[in-house]
Length: 113
Image (cartoon, rainbow, N blue to C red; front, side, top):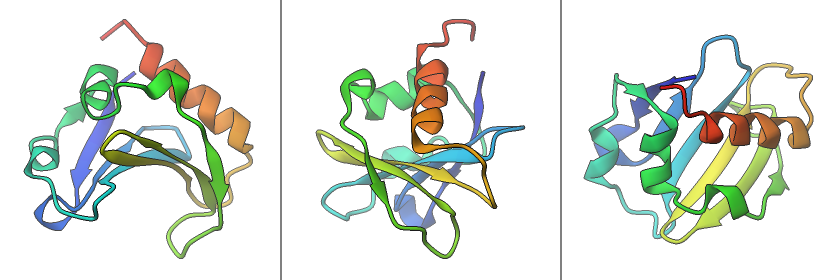
């Protein structure tokens, strides 16, 4: 499985969305600064290996729910070294937080690409 990359203005964040999934990944720097490295993935296909460059400890993250925001229904958040990671649901997603985390782990463990 691969995702579609979108970098926020000046590398403020990297978002990875997936076809036929109602959740996506958002990665930001914990210090709130922009990061030029995110821009490399804007408009490109993103693999699990690409995400692992930013989130090397993806398999041991401690996930915490967070309140819904204007552009998402909710989701979970975690921190890994220098980045914060959010798995955000879209629309009226029927997925539980546990299901989103499981789908994220399936994506990250995918060795087919």
